[in-house]
Length: 61
View 1 (cartoon, rainbow, N blue to C red):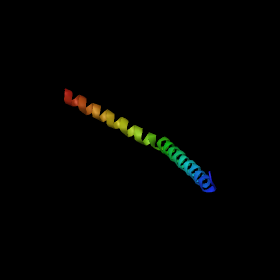
View 2 (cartoon, rainbow, N blue to C red):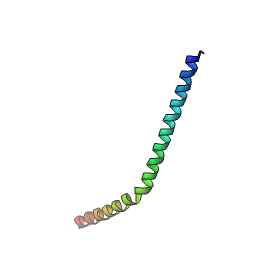
View 3 (spheres, one colour):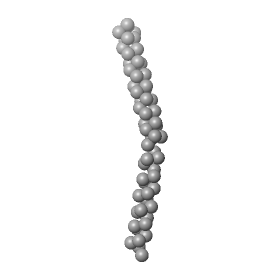
View 4 (cartoon, rainbow, N blue to C red):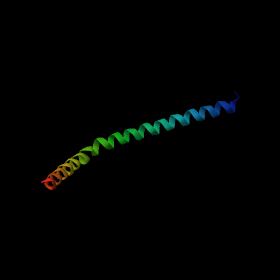
């Protein structure tokens, strides 16, 4: 391997590390977002489910 090959290989290694770091940060951001907003998504879904069940049971009778 000549010097250009070694430099190219080092640049690819650095690029892979950067991509992995970006992926890790993105995943962490997604986890934090889910933890922060999950309660706001959960309770409206529960309410919608209850209302839907009530409407459905009312139309069955």
